[in-house]
Image (tube, helix red, strand yellow):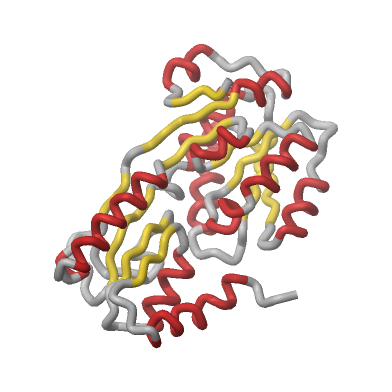
Length: 258
């Protein structure tokens, strides 16, 4: 078995520096952005991350980032309360919510803290399950208590995003209503998906790359707070789970997958 991708990030970043690239783009990955920052203090770095870029150590200011790093902060780990409220509306009988998190990413812990606060306000019980590999995801789903009525709440994480097919397949296999932080999961069969539009964030990152290549300095480019949010619901998946989508959700959804 080869080295896990996250372990290779320092080597990959060092290789880019060795090649003297004009700019490094680290999309949807705080670890990748941090690896690039550690590898160079001169080559411009543009990131798109779902974590707090100041707390993560990428920049020291959103409006005036110093050094060679700037980019786009996607509203992901600040949306847990709203996502949990939407899930409770769609699955009102779910008193217990299984939370799947990757403990090896920095933004997982503040995200979990916010989720716990939201769950308490909504009168929901949380069961936290950890997974950072494909086999651990399999084990987490196998451990779900299918004798009770519950639902799954997936914390935002780059690894989970790359495991789209596995997560959707397991949720269907175990008949678990699930909430995902990426709207694009809905078209693959995800039941309830609410979060920032990643394509828009990457477009904004691309604009910054263009400005860098035309001579701008990262220190001149403030960190963009991406605020374009989307709610997507898969009606077919809801039917397979025996769920009736409330009219209020259908009215506010940006996309309903038939």
